[in-house]
Image 1 (cartoon, rainbow, N blue to C red):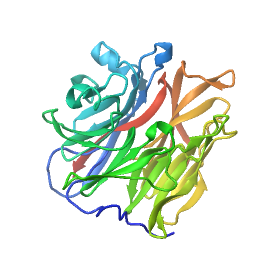
Image 2 (image 1 turned 90 degrees about the vertical axis):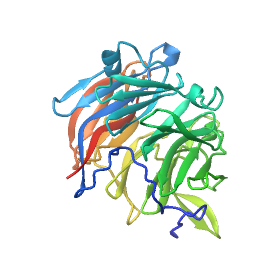
Image 3 (image 1 turned 30 degrees about the vertical axis):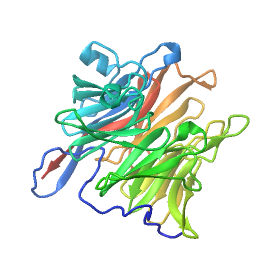
Length: 372
C-alpha cells in the first residue's frame, strides 16, 4: 500500500495546530506533560421518550461517578441531544445538537457562556452543531447546515466560517489544513472537505471507498477515516470500518484497515476500535498498530449479553481504555435506561465500572497540559 501524502492539497506542514486538549497560554520552558483528573461522558438522552441529555463525570481521585453533573452545577438541563465535548485550556465545551448551542463551562461544569450557533452563523447555516476540536485559541465546530464555525475562546465571537460538504460530522486539523468528514446523512455520497486555512479555499472530494464518514484522524502524515458505510434491505449495516487514504492509479481511495469498526480512538501508535455494526451477530474489539498496519484482538472482556458498545475513548495521560455502553433489557439494547462506563488498564484488566446517564455517547477527558 503506497503512502499517500494527501495530494488533495499541500498538507501537514504549517504553523496552526489542533488538539483535543491544549493549553491556551504560551509558557515555553522544558517539555509538555499531560495529566488527567477524570473522564466526562456525554449522554444524549432520548428525545422520543422526552428524556433530556446530561453529562456524567468520573473523578479519578475520589473514585466517584457523578451523574447529571451539569444539572447539579447549573440548576437546568442541557436539552435535546448533547453530542460532543472537549476540554481546552481552563474550559469545557459541549455541543448540544438539538438546541443549536455550544455550552461553555469551567471544569466544575458551571456555565460561563451559552453560544447559539444559529445566532452565530444564521438559522440555516448554524443548524444542529455536531462535533468540535480546538486549537489556536479557538474552537472549531461543524453544523448540519454545512459549515465549520471558528469561535474565539476569549471573546466567544465568530472568527471565521467555512462552507463544506453535506451534513459534516468529525473534523481534524494539521498544519494549515482542516479536514472535514461530510456524512451526507448516511445517504451514501459522503465526501471529505479540505480547507486551506491560509487561502480560505475549500475543496470537496468524493473518494472511492468513502460513503458515510464520521471521524477523521491524522497519524504519521496519513489520513484515517471512520466510515459507517451503508445498510442493506434488512437494515443491516454494511461497509463500516476504519479506513486509510491511499492511492491507486493516481487517484485517492480509502482502504479498510479494520473492517466493521464503528468506533475508534488513537493513542501512542495504535488505534483501538470497537467493531459492532448494526445487525451483526457478534461484537469484537481490535488494536491496529499504525507502523506495521497489523490488527490484533483487543484483550478486553465486555459481556455482549448485558451491554452494547456506544463509544470508545483512551485517556491521553494513562492509556487506559474506556467504553460507554448501552444496557440490554430482555436481550435488546435499551435506549431509555441508564448506561454504563467501563475502564480497562493497559493489560486489558477491568479497573472499574459505573452507571451513567441515558444515551451513553462520547467520552472525553479532564486533562491539563503543563510545561515542566
